[in-house]
Image 1 (cartoon, helix red, strand yellow):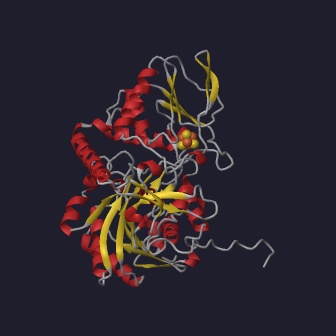
Image 2 (cartoon, protein in one colour):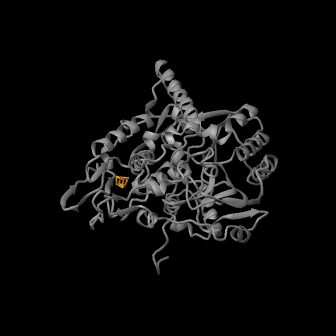
Image 3 (cartoon, protein in one colour):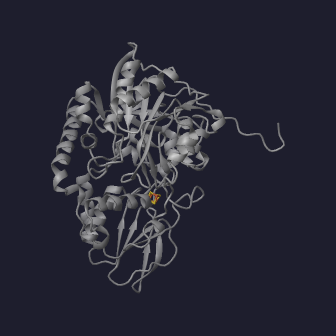
Length: 511
Ligand code: SF4
């Protein structure tokens, strides 16, 4: 598909999750943008987490249903497959996230095909653009083969990337093992690179109840909006302006713009709808966003955090996409499952990156060094301690050979680590990144907290989803279908064509 050069963003009023109203809004938006689905049409919601503990983290099923019905209304016979697909937050089976989101009854009612991306063959996409982090990426086959792609994210803040609208939601087009590669201080560049896999012709964001402050456990804010668009950068830029944020300050949006995926300036975007930008801004007034460094985040709690720069310090002095953000999400998850979480945790010190200052740990207070790149030398309780970085350059990590542990392997690994260091002043958790799940498990062990993975009301659901997923992938293997297919694959019509970076601004005084 060609990147739309004069994009449109449509802001519509929609105070409730009324399926028929959402359907009409999306259908009218598609008429206005002259869009008709075709071929393999794939809809990607944001279902990072769902269920009773994460009620505002995901695209609501009523929203998705309205979009599906609108697409069917606009189908003039060219659609060969209409499907929903997603990979939710890592370690959780997507089946469980779909179940918690209430998607299955809707899929059944509509006779809708759906993909759990981690169960599909993973196909190789070659990259050639300048500045790429690597030469190839893997994505699930339904993404690689889609002809008409519809991105249906949730309107939310994100403490690591400021916001998560359409562009950031691409983290869900990779399975766990590939998602974790470069999910570190170069995360924004990874998100930019993922744009080369596929581009949406339609974006429809669930901003009816938006989520502020956090990503997994956001505070609900009734914005009462459905926003539609036909270009991902322009779309995210307008969503930023609704919140009063300059999109050029949001790195993944700026990088996607600079790579040629669309304009960012309001003068280059046509905005229409029954809500003006100014009115939308009024509705969103006070909406909390912002990057929150880990030291600040834990102020006033039993955890003291210390963060030094990650490797490749010329890019940034803080790892926004990796371990420090993961512990913020980990504690948010634990607070949902254990109301006494903060009181139960003993005084802890967590250290990230090449931290150079003192660690204010008293006898009996554990220090946890988190991440491969952690590097520290100093005194702990009168003993000289040296923790060396074991960080491996990203060029040594190959998507072909990437592996990941499932949650049971992670439980064994983290429990073993905690047991071995029970009598020590400090503990080292390795990984790049150390995932949210591993940090949850470490805090559970250190604080005697309730383990969310063993919560009685979720255990049956989790195991059912986990075993089904394992069964599906094992059956494919038995049939001789490899999980990861090597070599560049044939692409669907939604692969972006000829992405051209915008011309650089002329130098001051030049032509
Ligand atoms: S180990 Fe963690 S903090 Fe260090 S670069 Fe990797 S993700 Fe970032």
